[in-house]
Image (cartoon, rainbow, N blue to C red; front, side):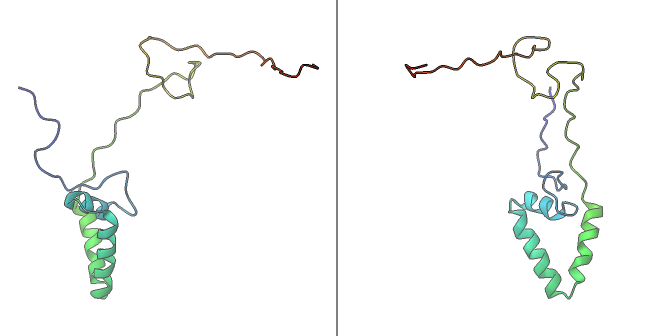
Length: 114
């Protein structure tokens, strides 16, 4: 039997890709299926209405919410490869693809006097 790769329940985690300070509001937004901007606005409003007391909740949530697992590292490419520095091409061939060298362009003219 294979293990599922996706958890059967939602997980409250701080994402890597949508952070302003620590990702607490973004994580709450993803968990509640709400735009993180709305969570940030609600947090700012709560901070104003409670004379700053709600600001104490942010570092507590930062400490309690775990981060997402780190994204997978991209495949390492040898700098001696002639295609290094170019986007990886998804082809069926194995091995490096040699760079193409285009010769000088020959001008074509439709002018009959030339």
